Amino acid sequence: MLANRRITFTAALTAFAALALAGCGKQEPTTATTATPAPAAARVLVVGTDAAYTPFESQNEKGEIVGFDIEVVKAIAGKAGFEVKFVNTPWEGIFNALDQGDRDLLVSAITITGERRQAMDFSKPYFEARQLIAVRRDAQVASFEDIKAMKVGVQNGTTGDEVVGKLQGKSSGNIKRFESTPLALKELEAGGVQAVVADNGVVEHYLANNPGGGFKTVSDAAFPVEQYGIAVKKGNAELLARINKGLDDIKADGSYDKIYAAHFGGTPK
Ligand code: ARG
Image 1: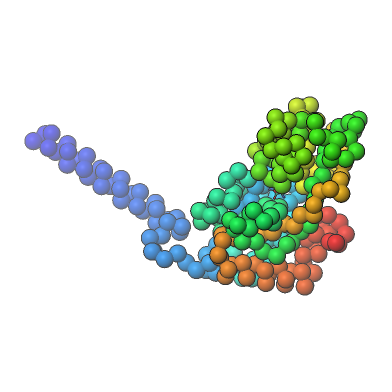
Image 2 (image 1 turned 90 degrees about the vertical axis):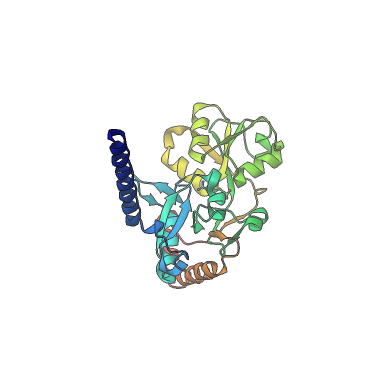
């Protein structure tokens, strides 16, 4: 009898716990049990960004994600009539997160490449970039070729990684691949690598903010021009069209130029 009662009590507790859990779940709008997800227009779209790429995307002291890319997407969303929420997403898993549907779109200074186009769809280009080399001020480096035999830091899986791979051979032991660009630059400061290759905007920003760091930049006409695009899941033509329309609108009404000037000064080429 006694044992039986205890079982009943335990069962009641378990049932209560289950109810409590279910109650908690209901407070989360994203776990609503409706079978069909709300149409893109009606819900907050989740934007993935690797927020360690100043001035394009970074986290401020309050933990908010800020930067040029963020303002561009907010302005596009305002025009196109959708709401966005930015979620810091490590570069390593960013394309997979889009493909899995964990992110609706990506803005992360992503260069549009032929290879990436196979896996996702891109908006019209919204920014032009090139690779740029950072080295110690006293380094004997005047061209890309000059870092052929050097230890070079790159962010893993970026276009910087790709160009250095072409120069040194993909499997070169002198290519040091980091999870983030700031980590590669830290290693340059520490002397663990002799050069870093990354997007010009980020390298320039870094040098401007570390005037005592003793670094210089080296550009090379051999680096191809790169275009940044906003990525959506392959086949999401509806969202892509809205983004492209929003981008046209913010270019036409001058808001893109304002955002550009606030971050880079002057007007875009
Ligand atoms: N533009 C380069 C690429 O697409 C680097 C982008 C890295 N972006 C970032 N937020 N970490 O490969």
